[in-house]
Image 1 (cartoon, rainbow, N blue to C red):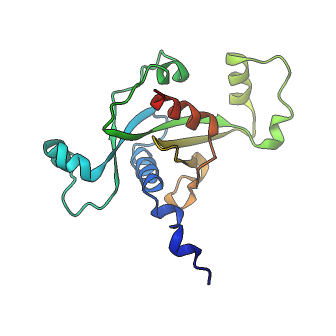
Image 2 (image 1 turned 120 degrees about the vertical axis):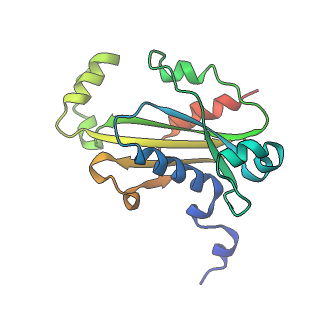
Length: 184
């Protein structure tokens, strides 16, 4: 057996992965067809020390060992495109990271080659929505100030906690957009 496992914790042991999976589980409990949801990720110990009343309201007793606590933010305006909305965010120093959950339609790679040329925006979205191989997916993407990233993907047709795919590079564009909210 390699000694590498003592140096690199398994993915679910990383605080960001646990936070992303916790958010995925929370949003999953709300069902599908949910709006996008934004979360601040704060250091749990720091939150207990600096904001004890908030920590109590969030149920963060001393026996909670999570390193990061997700705090849901106000609802994202449905009329504002997500990329524009993310461009308006600036986080205070107490926020260690952020995460976003959003539902989208996706096509398998085999279907991407059949996309008609010249489709853009609404017409492309309509084409994807009508495609027989489309799949609904919930993406939860988290980033930290230090550049760490994590994603969780859940297909609607395989909607169980054991069928969640995780990895840092699954949704790079969304991770980049979230990381930009920490740019100085």
